[in-house]
Image (cartoon, rainbow, N blue to C red; front, side):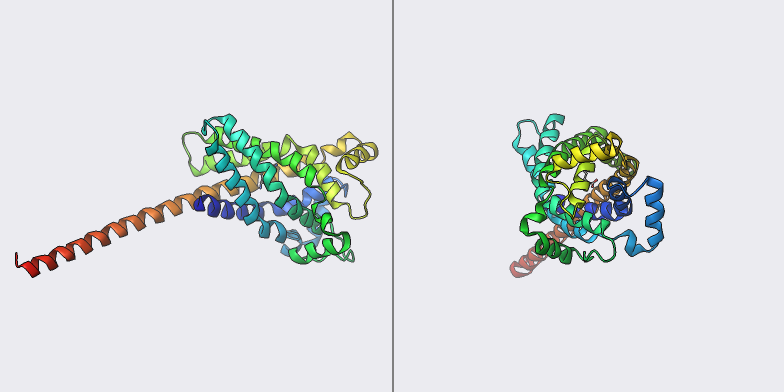
Length: 292
Ligand SMILES: NC(=[NH2+])NCCC[C@H](N)C(=O)O
């Protein structure tokens, strides 16, 4: 359990760091800032590491909470179901995890999205906590949960697909290359299938002026003004991001598990040696005392 959590956190951080610049590109394309090429050029103009990582604080800071929920709910649901190894069980446990993590993930992504889209002079501070406080101050506590419903609709099926496809691809051999490829493919699949929902979510959460009354209204208005094609815009960026990010994530998870297990094994060898040395000392002492 503790291992799942530590590995999940290290993996999550690796995934975020590897994927954030492409995530920002995705959000810009989704929000209608231009084509993939135009947005890439505009973002590269920023040119610094700090502009590439603007908005990374909230996901990085929130990953512990999000992954505690994801891996906790996923593991416990799996074990509670009658057949923990069936693919359908992985799917059900993934869906449950996706539902529960949305309550943490949605506000985290709201702060991230607002910071990624912020322009100078918007008054949006760059730190994660300052960003949260700004949102609460300007829109009340409820504003922090704008987009919760659409996050649930995206992430329950997404995490079912994610865990089921990863499991199906890694049965048997777990070499680093295979883990990276399977993690990447599972991540990419989980994003591509539900992509239009993510477009609506980014647009809805990025809307600071209250243009959209609800996520549904955001969908209707977006299709009406920007056409159906707007629902697929940015899918290239998201696929690349998801592949790199989730490949890195699962590789770090498996690496952490291996290091942990090796440390645990070394520890038990040490404990065994200590116990043996101790009992030998006791024997010797007895021998001396009783003169045998
Ligand atoms: N569509 C999803 N939410 N898929 C689950 C993958 C989550 C993973 N942390 C990522 O950001 O890629």
